[in-house]
Length: 483
Image (cartoon, rainbow, N blue to C red):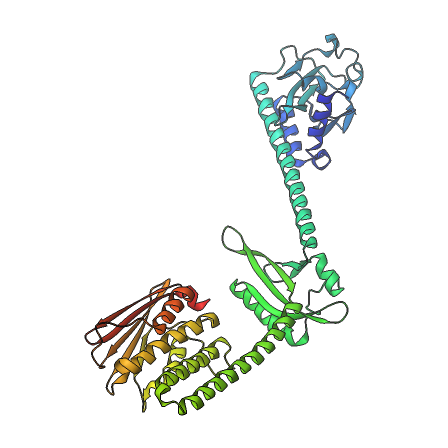
């Protein structure tokens, strides 16, 4: 077959002609073409490999004719409206069976039907059994051209629709293949929350082709998961929950499930997509680590107590190092309190900055009145930031008790916490103590504060010895405290 003809037929098949047979819109065009041209027959003819197919017809019962006797085969290649005023005198058609026999064609006019690529597909034609020496009028010629364009718009619409459906089907196949290839369970649901798809992983895991009613959920988790799902459906919020799911062998495994809504241009939820990942091994490992951490924490606290006791016993026999011993014991106790924030006992310690500071400053209370007051903002603190924060403020409080405001009966300290967005400003202001020294020797405590603030809290600090007492500004990263 000629390559050009092969390409033409390929394009022709893209229109899905079977679905356009007797199409109402095309039929209406054929009927109007017959009326416009005052002809008994009008056809929407597409030329295939061995026949011409009439997708729409007026005044003719036949659905097709052989290609080798087709007028439209010639018309579609004409480049414009082709009129055959007397087929009997035209060498191309003089012996045509439809000229010498029924229906005795005596006039033919065909307007080519061209694809978007400019390929000839067939013709919109009218046929008359009477001769027309003058052919069609100008209005009829223009009308036939316009109607042919309408035919092609209808054909293009179907072609694009078929292409879109094919592309959609291909994408859906790709997505399903992708969903089936991932190690996690994947699913989708309609806006009302009805599950309509589970990937192959779900079938392999549960042994059930479908589980739209949650039969594989652990009974203790189903009510909680259902409530969370209903909440997400009602609010549009992301669904996320940990639960147990029964595997095909009967073992319940911990999963983390998450689903997000898909919205249209107006913000309306049109679908939900979700996944469930097996975290059972991580869950078990986490429980083992927590148990080990609690045991380790307990042993470390015991070590703090033993070391403090040994230092106390040693200092009793060495009065000359009592001050150093007391300071060292205070530091060890501060470490112990800070350690409580790294591995807090259940219900024992606060998880906020203010709560931690109140615990640390508890020993400095005077009867029922705290000598160190805390004002301003508060935020949650992460375990990794608790230790450096606790050590910094223990150092400030200890120095104040030895040399600053807390060394005087009437001295007080005011700590103000200010949220500055990305940073937190913690201002330590002492009042009522002895006049500060003009020169302060940098010792281990200062280096401890420097390392904690700049190294672990992503911040910086500044000390000012004003007439009323020490003012210390600590600026730390909000993210470093809370992460």
